[in-house]
Image (cartoon, rainbow, N blue to C red; front, side, top):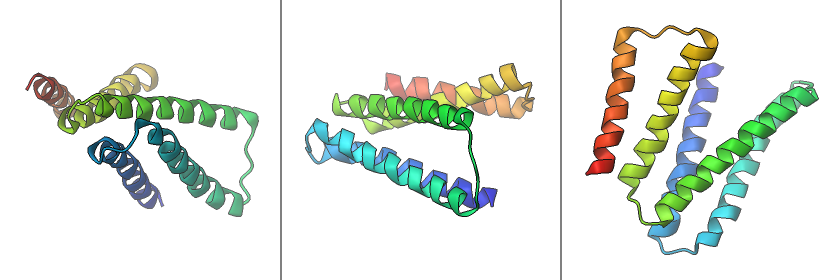
Length: 139
């Protein structure tokens, strides 16, 4: 089940970000990013809530609050990415910075807050990813 969920996340998250590049590339008005992201997030809510409701899952206010906080942060990140793309930054800089930055944050937070251990090869990958983001932004 987790593999299926990860594939859904990969497809939906990647497609929504790709659409943010399409909007300025096709010369569409920047105001369209709001309805575009609203539709993606509403579709995501349905994709998550419908299976949970069909299984009879009950949530408390704590889960709803954390979900709303994470959705708000995610929306803020998507809006920042849309603004960066609309300001003329190329996608080959914007996407690696956002994706690579997320990986770095997750790796460091996992170590600091959850005592997760990464193999030295994994840390090497994180370092090389960060270096590649720096090199892409300089080019």
